[in-house]
Image: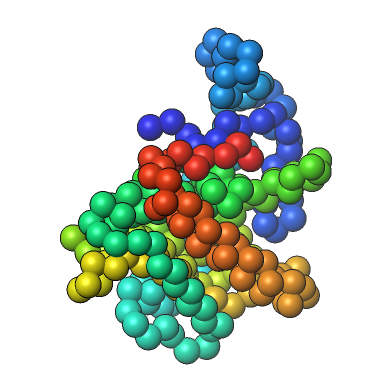
Length: 238
């Protein structure tokens, strides 16, 4: 499966504040027709990005409670966050929203790029990449690992945990479920504490950003459930 959003030739910035240019990358394949999706200059992932991915794959999560978002009780010593929204009724809504979530629809619909792109699978390591719209600041590159997935008749979703280099330390889950009455819900659960020095300095701003991100996750899944979006259709170029 191809990588998620196309990668532009510009600078990247790791979450430790180190910027790296991607000069020397080359464009792939024939140019798309004018006005077609992807009608822009794109390039293969830079060697710097691939080095970050290899380093992230070799790293271990920076917290002990890996997988704790599976349970009803989140671990002590972290900030906790739970948000739930009603999506509709019936197995079709569950399946549609669940596939959207497993396809990283929450993240892609919120402005992140996912590298390498593939539906969430336990053990997969990804780099979430984020650029500030309308600026020339380098992208943030945030390493994460999928720590569990679930695909059951009444429950679909996954969780990822942070890796060294992430501004936070902890775990976040994204689960679509159907109750005994057939009502379908989407819930985001998270436990985290700030890890990077710049995040700790801006603690109130970091907390607000997390809250706003989760609100956007909820909105993205609501739209997908209502509109019947295909998995991965929320992909955005970053």
